[in-house]
Image 1 (cartoon, one colour):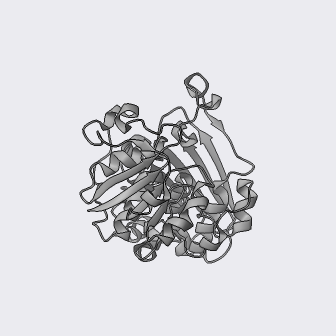
Image 2 (cartoon, one colour):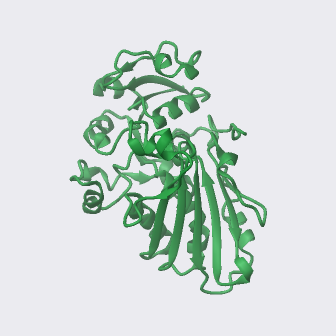
Length: 344
C-alpha cells in the first residue's frame, strides 16, 4: 500500500482522481489540498464519495506533509506545480502533474503559449511525457510525469500508427475536435453556463490553442520531423467526452489500415480499435479510461480518417494519471481502472 497526496482537489480532475483511487487496491489518499476549502470534509463537497473518504479533509498545501507521500498528483492550474515540484522531489516524492507545466520540453515555447516565464526549467529534462502507449518504459523509472492533455491524447493516439509507419503526409494533418464543457474546468465562467452552452456548438481557439504545441511535439516525435497540423477545437453541449475526427493524406498505398492499427495497439489495455465501418460515440467511453478508434478510407482514395473518442476527465486526465502511477510503482496497469463505461 502506498500513500498519495492530491494538490488541488476541488476541481473536476481532482474529484475524478478520488473516485478512481477509491477502487484502487494499493493506494491510500493521505492528503488532499485546497486553499479555498481548507478544513471542509471531502464528502461534504462531494457526497458521492461518502463511505470512501469520510475522514479525509481538505487542507492547505504543506510541503512537509506532502513530502511524506510516495507520490503526489497535481490537479492544479498551470504554474502551481512549478513552485512545489522541486521541493517534493528532493524529499523523495514522485510527481504526477496533470497540468501543462512540464508537457512542453522547450521552456521558451511554454512561456510563449502560457503567458509567463517557466517556473522550473531545470526540471524539464527530467520530466517524462506520460502517454503510456509511447513512453511506457520511461514512465516506469521516472520521478516526474507530465500527464498529457485531453485533446493531445485523443489526437496522438489516432495519428500515431499512421505517422510511425510514414503512411501520411506529416505536413498536412487536420484534427477537428469536440469537447464537453468539463474541459473548461469547474470555475464559474459564462460560456460554460447551461443557458450559454446548451443547444449550441461553437469552435474556439482556431487561430491557436494551448494544446497545439503539445500535439505538434508528440506527433513530431512519431514522425521523426516537424509536422504541419491544423487543430480546431469545439465546445459541445455535453458534460464530458472528446470526439476527434482526424484527417491525413496518404502518401502511398497503405495496405490493410485496420490490421495496422490493431497490431499497433494489440497489447494496449486502454486503446480499443473497433471493427471496420464503426463510428465510436463519446458515451461508449464515459467514465472509462479508454480510447476507442475507428479507421475509414472514403472511396478508397488518398484520405484516411481516424475517429477517436475518450472521456476527457479519465483517459484525458485522471485515469491516465492513475495509469502512470501504476507503471511507476509496478502495479497491474489496470488497477483501479478496469470499470467499463457508463451507459446510457
